[in-house]
Image (tube, rainbow, N blue to C red; front, side):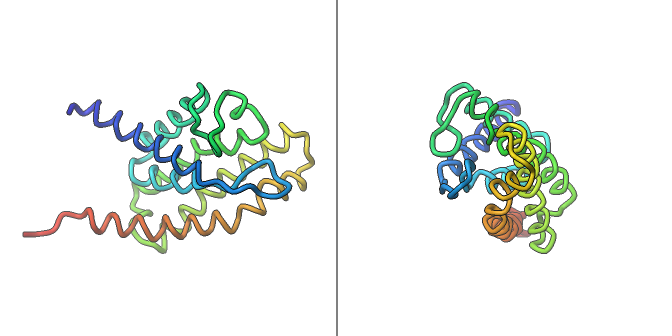
Length: 180
């Protein structure tokens, strides 16, 4: 397989992984934003693939969902999902992938005590962008947007950061070549 084909396969695989974890979704009472596994996929794939491929994977995910594949939470799709009140959470995947990918390039994903804060920062970046977008698109005051799009997601974001922060160092340890 050529290098370009391998790159494309990694990027598409990460996009599909994000789409798969998007289907792990729970409604949040009073919020238009569901709790999903998407951000877990974003941080894991960005750490594994690096900043450019991590961002490319999330861009592919967004594009495939926008053109009609049922890739967003609960099988949603279309440009309206990106342009609507919850679209900022999706768009936030791009800078989160860049941040996590850049930090992972410097080894912050290799030890749990640096990986967990890194992955939490990626989760929080998505939430901050999403809340700002939600405020504008839904015509909410900041406090309401914060209560609907940020506070309910802190426990899940922390849990996903811990899961990813424990998983990635383990994966890197297992992937390290062993001396014969």
